[in-house]
Image 1 (cartoon, rainbow, N blue to C red):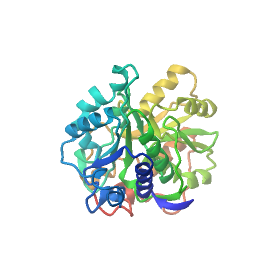
Image 2 (cartoon, helix red, strand yellow):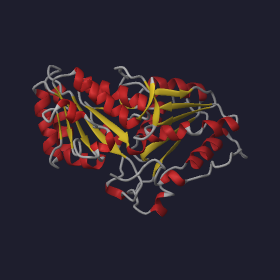
Image 3 (tube, helix red, strand yellow):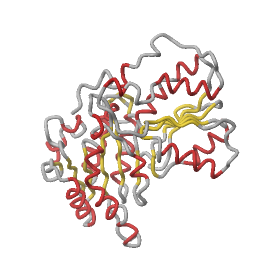
Length: 350
């Protein structure tokens, strides 16, 4: 165990799979440029050569088709989009070919393709460079969709995604790349269909995903100050969703708050609430609450962004409202909103 960055965990997982799987290739815009996709592909081309790690032209739909052709002949593929927004140009290949291959061939043929898509916000990236849309990919039968939230599950999930015989969409938040944590230096897997309980509790179930799970974890101090015993769940797997863990938690607490990273309408959060009510209409003793983005495109202006994303303060006040705490206690510095547009450790958009 040693402390490494999220980006290093991505790099390490890719390196280990390149070493273990000889018929595995890595490519994408920036894979071999000086920045190496925010450091996630550092030293890979030097170790494994230009035939296994390489940069590509800007042609997303064609490249997805090339990946399908390679994978259908037995090659494992990992390719990257430096923004999830760029992947929308390849939706024809993803929806009509990639996701359906296993079913169209009666389970006899599969496509071992992992697509890294980077999401994020801030720096005035605006409506076409700061979207999330994990709910879009979760609606495509045949795809697994995961969203790591820390270096540990980033490494384990990426290794599991690469080794999975079928396609996986791997969504990583740009603000997580510099997050550090202790990670096992050995080769290990993380299940692609399980959520993670950050903290057990009995008063309320709170579900986050990707960067919102980090925000939830940062609330532990103030929740303790207000004697709120919350159960915090990091969703991790967007498709399939680990409903067993979620149901067990909500059945215990009877209260639910979900902090989604996408637009509220048609979101993963709204899907979870709908499924829970369908399973047990009496499961809640308080109305479930869903926080996420309003239903209009991401603004460019810093002034607008300050009211666009749910802040830590807004999340906490919503918890207090559900728990019925009228006069919550605060600690110094809790109201700071400095990281809504740019975290301290994020040194630029590209």
